[in-house]
Image (tube, rainbow, N blue to C red; front, top):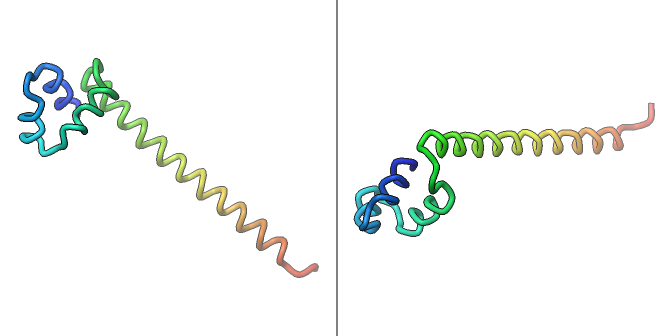
Length: 80
């Protein structure tokens, strides 16, 4: 992805780049908007941080569901 952005920034024909890389032209423009001006290592780091953030959000959602399940089970247990 990062190399594609660098090539798109320097290339005069984005359509040729899209055909070579097998991506839609709109994808190149979205990548350019999001990652334009960054170095490849910076863009890769942003991509890794986004993936890590998604993983943490999933873990948080799973924990919230577990807490809700435990509250439900506790409220349905017979008095003892």
